[in-house]
Length: 308
Length: 73
Image 1 (tube, rainbow over the protein chains, first blue to last red):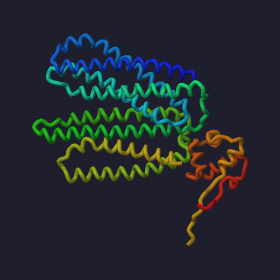
Image 2 (cartoon, rainbow over the protein chains, first blue to last red):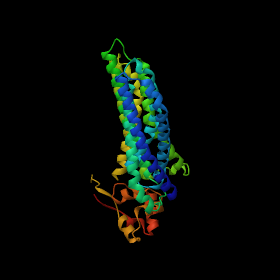
Image 3 (cartoon, rainbow over the protein chains, first blue to last red):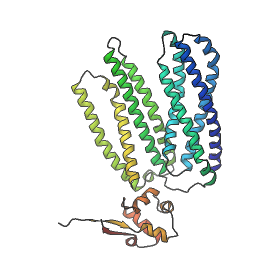
Image 4 (cartoon, chains in turn purple, orange):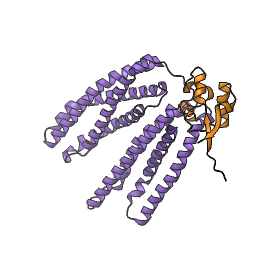
């Protein structure tokens, strides 16, 4: 296990360092593409010259992401103490991996639509590049920080692991926050366009598609950590999945989440009842309810568990 | 009616010290709970079940009332 982790750490470190150089290349490409579109230069020729190298760099990014996630899973297994940076990287790594696929779709749209004006997809593309950059840098920092410990420390014997329990709560909090923020941003954008440009409002499917896609991106890391936790727990009887303090913490946080989520749903119901014209709530009430409850449940569980 | 201001206290930390300074993790492994649970019991933030208290007492080979006792808040 220790040897496997050491090999995985070193490989990820090398892949990560090369990926940062790749990210500089792709960002330079996108910045030049931006410049060529606004200066009405020969975009077609530029795309023909660079699209294959950029695609190859993206395939390399994909390999790095998969390797990095594998390393993070090994680290979660090896280190029996919870660590926010590791949980944050698991969340960012999965998000960044999903956004690699989104980058392909965005780049494809830009290549098709630039003749009709400046494509707004560029903003999402650069946001996605920022997520990749944060993941690459923080992953390298984690590997450097834990390298000595992996070399010198033996694996701690822990029969009842609480680190995965706490890490799952960290990821639940991150998923909840990002889900709420993304749903809020999409809704605000849709609402403002519909109010101020009533002649050409966004079609409802745009909001539905946007909220569904971003909700999936936000929830996948949480689903994956739960799957990982379940795989670990399958070796135990269901009654032994938690110890008695964890049961107590979960019971308390479930009660808080239940009461608060009912209040939230009541507020949504009253708003819909009074303002019948606000149809937007009909599309977003479930993501709002889900991410709010996830955030509340994970944060209260973490609070009760960490408090003592 | 007299107000009940008593709470469960324990000598867990001392017992660990006397038992070759066994770590919280080692004790947790022996009685089948997480390290945080032992930590919370020691700090008086969590009251263990009767079963867990008996398991801890059996591990230290002491009567349960030598480890857990009622004390003023």
